[in-house]
Length: 92
Image (cartoon, rainbow, N blue to C red; front, side):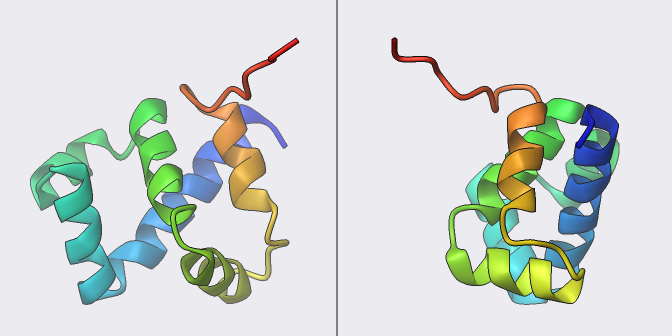
């Protein structure tokens, strides 16, 4: 996966979240953003990383999104690692 593909996946996740009024409300509350801010920040890689952070908080959301988009369940985590702030720390 490339960073560009990771951004595409995150945009798809944002669309999936937005399609659910309940889940979108939870996302807005958790992120502290408004609908207008989501629209203006949707092209920002760091914001897209936060979308995947939100999605990854609940296994049911991950499986729901991946099932709806015919994706392997690992894809959101792989995509998250390619966006700003998603680097896996090296503890050695």
